[in-house]
Image (cartoon, rainbow, N blue to C red; front, top):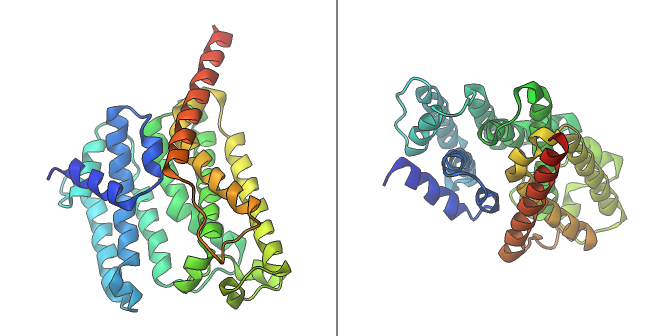
Length: 295
């Protein structure tokens, strides 16, 4: 099996919604994106593996340290893992900063010793590591105008935060069962919510907390879009497709009045495909109109 085939199998097995956003990439971009998300999946699987669930974090720690070394090997042409080899090939075309891969590993490592977050700033730091850093690598694949570098980087980080917060809201029940509470203690105290409330039906307190978290999601999403220039928007259609799929899940959660302690809210694959097609079509029309205006 080739390194790229290994990556494709890894991403396909994950059943991730990211697949739908990959449909509108060039072949070269798709290969790079699949390699990147295979890396994320590989690291995430280490933290979620059975030996960690059995409280043996030492094995997971050893594997994460191995990957830190393998990231260095990517940049010295010594990679041995199929995913690392696939990423090293991408360096011929894309400017992947080594530090971002290490940031992702550090973020996953935070789950090994997770004891909750005290503040929203602590949670935002986590969101950067597990999502924002991925966004910073993704924009190197999709592209942007050099003069907009700072804006597009802020866009990538804030969008990553917004989408990760949607994940956290959606997975309240699952995370509680895994003894991982991501909603900050400070926010829970503000609304008089205790962790045991995540195992029962909603009450006035939990609904207020979820509504507050929803405002945070809206804030970071709007911050992201505010930093996305018209010049770069069409190139970022892949991220916009992903964002719209996540927003559809988020809106469904709100419309059903946050049933997150009872079930995991999702949308049908056909709905995801429709969102992907609709978003790509809208962004193509928008870009055509932009070019007509500038002549």
